[in-house]
Length: 358
Ligand code: ASP
Image (cartoon, rainbow, N blue to C red):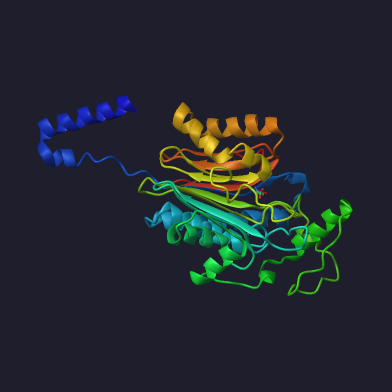
């Protein structure tokens, strides 16, 4: 880096001497290209257990979210705008465990967590245990931009959302039959009490929903995005319903800055997915960025170090997507699959689910 900037200064000086100021001005460095990477949750996701319809539905959902974020970046929008645009699409997609389609708590509620961080300013906003705000990612952004705080929880967070004019919905808006069936199945298996079907939920179908029976379809699907805009700024965001059958106001890693979400132009932007308790204890997102920042590691190597060594050694499962201000993009997971997608300026879109995909 130091050698590079010395060289740059020397080239600029020669240009000034040889060609005069006009030529020196034309030597402006090329704009960093925009890039975006996202995940839709990691877990036991095996090709053999996935129906072709489910496979296609997940890929379509990931692609739609990717394209929404890419469109923002393509027209010169900020990385924060791109992160929010992509996550809003995934929050509305019932396949993913965020917004509509979130998993249920053991008490039969949807309690939503989200965070966003701006790598340029190190400003961050997050929310936990939200039950009435349609787009928790937009609420996290409002906390970042319009409150003096970083994190708001529960009814206070929803009240702030309302005051900010963010769309409020009845909690039953987040209800989906496949997540409900997932909760009932898990509680039955563990011999725990089944809560009453939530108020406002549609009547139960005559037949269980075999069509949404994917591998762990009932448990996974947290969403997260990391982006680099053409101004060279990175951002990251994550949104989730947390872990199925979670207890007593449990909060995972997603809304905890440094654990499930982190962004800094000094290092990288990361969004995580997996067993949140492990990601919190390892401060996974910040740890990856610290390896990049202080050890000079490449982004992929840093992500692999934390996921395949540290997380695995502690017994945790999951993965991350990551983006560096110089355009390096990485994903890493120690599960059999992670819903994921990426695209960079001038490149082809890549969408993947299983481990054996590039
Ligand atoms: N990390 C999320 C949490 O622990 C869940 C997930 O990513 O599947 O809340």
